Amino acid sequence: MKPPGSYKLIGYHQGRRAYGAAPTAGNDPFPLDMGREMRIVESLRHQIVEGRDEQDLRIRRVFDGPREIYRIEIEVPELAYLRTTLLDGDALEELLAHDDVRNVVASTLP
Image (cartoon, rainbow, N blue to C red; front, side, top):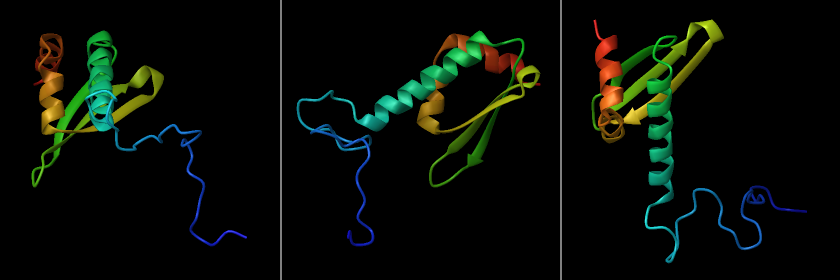
């Protein structure tokens, strides 16, 4: 019988590291979190640029301190689809660094 609180690690199989584990020497130079954040930003960028006409875009600041957090909502009413993503200030700056995204955001402002 196993003592309470001991569980098998999912994703850690045959010497492979689990998701979220710290990278070891020799792996790619970017931390796992950085890679995931960049994939999320690129996915948002692609969705914002590709779906201009049929979607509503809203960007709001949720927290001001100690770290700025922004909420990005992409809504497609025809599909009953709503994507909500929370980003920090650095990730939002990375998203808005692309001219095509900045143009779409500027066109949604009143």
